[in-house]
Length: 297
Image 1 (cartoon, helix red, strand yellow):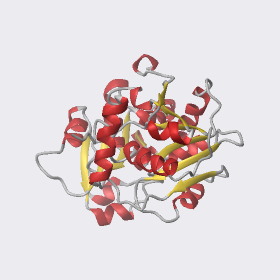
Image 2 (cartoon, rainbow, N blue to C red; image 1 turned 30 degrees about the horizontal axis):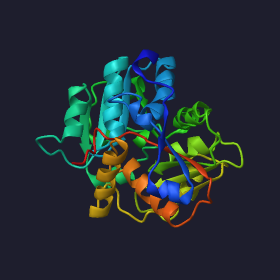
Image 3 (cartoon, rainbow, N blue to C red; image 1 turned 135 degrees about the horizontal axis):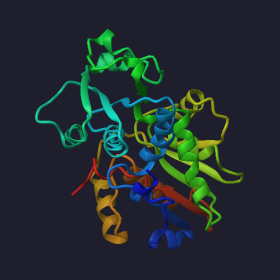
């Protein structure tokens, strides 16, 4: 399985007029290069869940997500490459033809089932007690034969996988490590492995006033990190954000998505511009992948 993935991932120095002017040393950890279909934090969150599924001798992975979920496509691809059957419980109604993300998942062999949004919100999908029969879903096997992974892969095993990226950063002495934050597993895993005075900062990709406290409660985490609230809706773009992503690709030769890493870097550069960080601060920003599902032209 290790031969499938490019690990550890490299650090790319990111320089432009702003970083030079503000005296900021910025590096991008290229987790987007881990695998073309199972990239970034998605593989890191799945890694130890796969090991646990094997330990329990389960042969089917069942997980949850939206119609454009990077986690759904990554789980489907993992099943294809590693040898698991996969089942995706999708938020919302089926729409044909399938979008590119769901078509990819289905082509990987994932069995797709749809739940209306109201019911989906009521599911305790972070618990391992999902009962498909109560929703008249036929998964084709006994639920006891299935290894359940929560939405976004966000559980304690995910934190263990995400924490490892800190161990890979040996060549520089960084002050901050930043990433996009949705379910919060990535920032929680990173923060759990930092040594003071190193700091972790997550950039919320959806509107959420108390995301930091929710993350700490969800994972029973005592680690110190901050969440920068972008006050933006999930997967919504603006002309300014798209221009930033376009210009970044022209300048640095690196493709960003607009849901996660593109948004994180967009707001990180705003903070740099506003002198949020002292001169000579060294920052590592994590490219968590996702470009397969959210390309911009």
